[in-house]
Length: 332
Image (cartoon, rainbow, N blue to C red):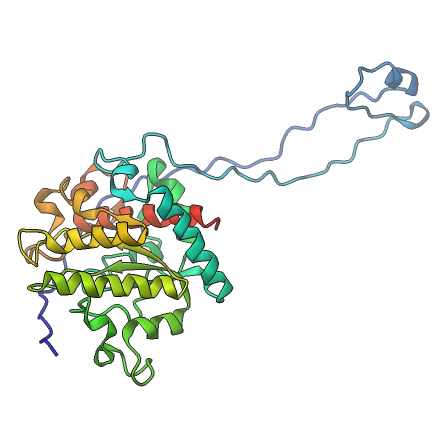
């Protein structure tokens, strides 16, 4: 078995305190009571057809009953000018009509198999195995602001999944080691069970976010073959794969692994997050000193313009946006 590459871990960044704006809650209060003039039967008959009538008995006035009803607030919608650093979702979230049809078909198959519609899993390496990554959405310590506030619905839908780093999240994970039982956590996985099979059994997700490629170097043909096997395995098990390109060039300047990820997404018609393209909008592609892991800034206040130049906050937001689109397509 090839040796496991040693990953350099990004040092814990110094937190930059940004005072989040506080919104003043509107003062509550009951609506003013309106005086209602009660019509006699004769007067009521003369009212225009369709008008709401209240008729007292024999001219005796009686106070109308007050019926309190809860008016549901309309669901927030994505603003028409939605973007990240000038890039619209259509530029970094790639889902063709054929991919949308496939997403719905895979999800339906998963539901027939008993997959949990409220749960997703993560397959990835140390880029994800950090509290600065997607776990932020389970911590409730963020400000989405007006532009991204519509994403609260997806955070609530999949609450608990963002911070769950199960057996399929391993430091140093490659595309080939996904299927190697030696990489599985023996405390939770069964004998001869690989990390992917183990996670599907334990968490029973309907969706899986796939972040691979940063540790695969030297054998481009081997990466695309293994990566395709990962994605096909998810499809066969009724789990919707969401793929993502990466910011680093660990495998070399030819960007071979991102090209392979794009090819597999197109071949198998599954959703693709083009973080490679979003990284072009960030200083230093959003990479930290080791040129693999991303930069971080806290708190996550998306009303602060400075946050949109930092790696992990932009990555986390983009992942949340593609997850929201997939959620809508499967009708959840």
